[in-house]
Image: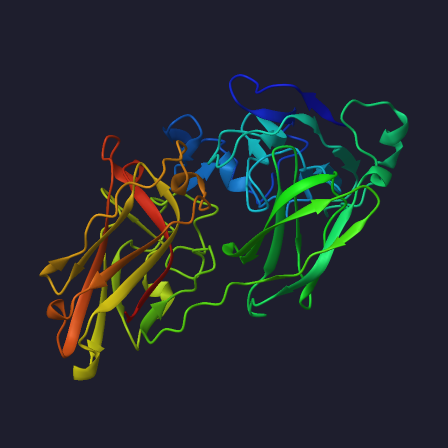
Length: 419
């Protein structure tokens, strides 16, 4: 199948949706995270609380586009699957880390392929042919291969379809990212988007439409290099890319990794599949003591009306009492949420100002990927002391809606270093 559009649709969602009998197909993707049977909506019309207090939402069924080649619903000896092979996402928007709804179960079982939406939208829609994509029926509950030959489209005179022999590639080295992280390559322009993961310091792109592209490289999901490249029909262009080296720093402490993901922090292992108020979540806020705590002791999100604050306790030697720089990386903000900083109960960091607004719920619907803003404050020596010190990190933002719908942000990493 494929879908061709010439403009944005109203109300702003382009999707394939199959509604099926739940009695035959009771299990959704990442079941039961999007099964709302017997549950009551408590945030908008899409986020539900069940009698046992657990939360459900169709957004919790999502996976990153770069990983979401096959998803489906299953029952006894039956599976129905959406397959997005090859360049199925090339005319969608959002990039390799974008996530959108895959399934929801209530009175019926719903199976989706979201091509475009306004959910945590960070770039304009692309127009033209979406796909090809496929829906497959099997007698197994195991996902089938995502390799589907759609080359027959080239003989069907389908508007917007570009066959392989009218495409080109990019290949080269991708260096400077530790083997502890994924190295992800991403190409995009107004008409198309592509991505791949490097292996062993090299990469080869998917077959791409001819044109000029912005090229980015990520350490997991943290941008570390950017360039441009032009692709031509029938050719493979060589393009080497290397991560911009981190400046040499004398670090006092670092909590987490600047990798564009919050998963190493408290509740980071749960946030994709449940609401922040879910009883399975650990208590928000907390205290992190340098030298004895782990990132799991620091909350992955802080809010202006929910979530409390996080205190970092650390010690300085007399030689370390000098101007220091605090760096806080974030992955997503909601309702103007951004960090506040208070040192030793006396010195407060300046408000960095509201980030660029993404007008979509994120944290409460399992989202964590936004602009990736990084904030820094220079802490004067006069605010520090030999021995025990503390930094309290909170949040400021709009409180119009309250709770976790007030201003909040998601943490990527925190570092204190010598300026």
